[in-house]
Amino acid sequence: MLKEFRDFAMRGNVVDLAIGVIIGAAFGGIVSSLVDDLIMPLIGAITGGLDFSNYFLPLSSAVTAPTLDAARQEGAVLAYGKFLTAVLKFLIVAWVLFLLIKAINKLATKKAEAPPAPPEPTASEALLAEIRDLLKK
Image (tube, rainbow, N blue to C red; front, side, top):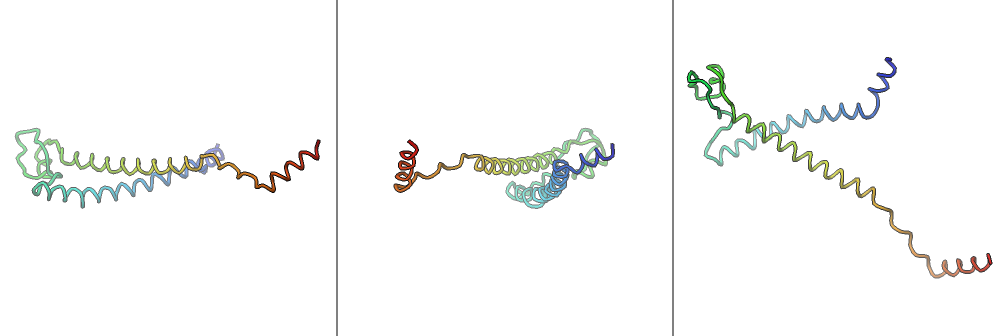
């Protein structure tokens, strides 16, 4: 049973999947930084200094804090600004994966195309083929 598990774990698919998960996690960190540190501040600057990370709706009248962290300590809140940021991160990851899969599919179709037809025989080759056929008769 241990041998079977080792054979399964060492198959290319499982190892490739593990590598993909690790690279995906690292890519997620890059996308988080891109959204949090570059895109959202730019959107905030364009919209007049809005900070999406602090957008929330209090679910209780006891919540009066101006920032999300302080409001969470006072009671329940809907942090829709963080949700918008997470949706943007998802869209960026989905777009990059779409482009990656599209490129891979394009490469696969290029490989699957039929090889070009062999070139037409030259005049001397055609003449030799005729002579060969006449000699066979």
